[in-house]
Amino acid sequence: MVENGLIERLRSGDRRALARVISKIEDGSPETPEIISELYPSTGGAYSLGFTGPPGVGKSSLIGQLIKLYRREGLKIGVVSVDPSSPFSQGAILGDRIRLAEHFLDRGVYIRSMGSRGHLGGLAATSKLGALAMEAYGVDLVLYETVGVGQGEVEIASAADTVVVALQPGSGDAVQALKAGVMEVADIFCVNKADHPQARGTAAQVRSILEIGQELNPRPWVPPIVMTRGDSGEGVEELKEKIEEHRAFLEESGELKTRRRESLKGTVISWASSRLEEELQSRLSRENSELMNRVYSRELDPITAAERLLREVQ
Amino acid sequence: MVENGLIERLRSGDRRALARVISKIEDGSPETPEIISELYPSTGGAYSLGFTGPPGVGKSSLIGQLIKLYRREGLKIGVVSVDPSSPFSQGAILGDRIRLAEHFLDRGVYIRSMGSRGHLGGLAATSKLGALAMEAYGVDLVLYETVGVGQGEVEIASAADTVVVALQPGSGDAVQALKAGVMEVADIFCVNKADHPQARGTAAQVRSILEIGQELNPRPWVPPIVMTRGDSGEGVEELKEKIEEHRAFLEESGELKTRRRESLKGTVISWASSRLEEELQSRLSRENSELMNRVYSRELDPITAAERLLREVQ
Image 1 (cartoon, rainbow over the protein chains, first blue to last red):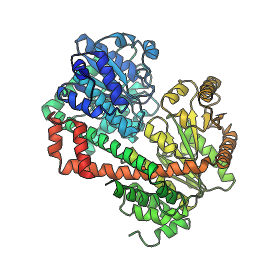
Image 2: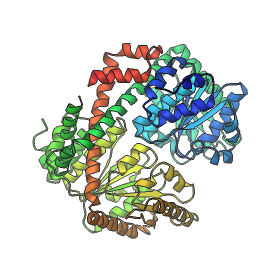
Image 3: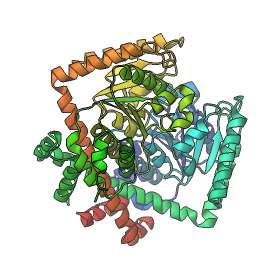
Image 4: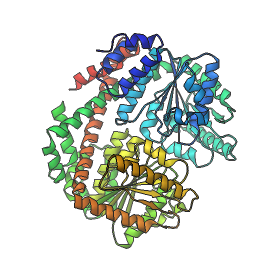
């Protein structure tokens, strides 16, 4: 049973209760299902932003600047960072290096890095559940920060209402992003380090890729491209406006509901498949070393072995 | 049923047969189980190398140089590239830019990029199955190239016998790699762009992290650090020697058998969980929109919904 009053305290805005709840979720505590079932009715009110892009593009300073703007409006913000290279993930140690310290001390901002202890399916589920806990705690906005290289990490960011993809001038990032399937999930592009000599070229490259995409498959929302500077905050106001425009588009078109359903469906599936995978793992370790022996000796191929295992689980 | 004689032709070294078989595997053809069951007895002879590291570290040129050395000894080589930013993945288009063209034309080298069409569990399974097809075709060495940022991608490389982690001088890569769990899977570190002014510093940083690791948890194999240059080929001979030393260590210690069993176990589990996840997806789309409606309206939380779904599948 969940500790008496813990969810109540979380819901009334107790930071320590929130921290404990997220730790329990992250550690895969057996209380997790009960915790989620208790706090879930208080969720659904926050807007979510996904931020993704390659390491070194400056996502964290950009997010820092954006948080500053939202804080001025009095919004409470939760950050779920699943980028191992992010200073958010490294907490206060590197935080002050890029002036995040102010946010770490700000009671209206709750920053949490989620570790990749399990496999990615697990991480997708825990980061979403962590965000639900933040919602119940009372944040108005959840920011997911992920590194846009791995497919799994992209999936986490793309569960958000609005997805911002940050690109680095030069370095052929635009084309790389296209290959990795990141382009498809972007609602807004952000060419960071706008003072870089190749910034305009990168923006032009993205624009032409988007134009080709529009010709092949016209879509009602064409992702805008914003030039930003995470260091000086230049362009971040415009980024915020574009986020608001996208939100208005989602609400008017009814797309917001579709996205949120899809995102929740993803959470249901991630949880279910993590559970199944755990069960497969433990079966294969416990009873079926015999099965693996036969695979190892080439008597039985891995797919046939997997199908047998499935028949046992089902 | 699998096309008559296809596996036979693959086994006799027919490149087009190999290409067709891998495409079927990648497309998730219903023939896949039969294909694998037919070719599996001819596998198990090849040695495998995992190459991972952040984008831009120069993995591809390094692999190109290493292939050159192995080709001089007459070894047949298969490359499975799951790095979307790799020129290997972009095929011959960018290939000549970094002088890979010679390998693309070399009949003793088979290069194949595996797309991330499905989710990562799926990619882990298909890349391993693709490698099995290469083994049956007759390669002596399989090289997995992955980008070492996403957890899922690291898992793919770490299924290999020897794992090489390439790092970039400067840029705090060593620390980032540590965070991402990449350090733990490395058998050999390779500081590429050894002519970079910070190359020695990066090597020293890795060395001190390894020393701390050894003190906390002494292990019989301490990963060596090799300084290389993908452009000139400097240090690649030494890298190859270290790979051979590691192979000898694995064979003498009996660790090779353990690793290969684990890797096959991973393939069995990836296949089984992909299958289960597909089933969950289709159930949730077909019959259970009612279930998702209740999740969306906050009547039912996602974990309870997942548990109900699981009970139905099992």
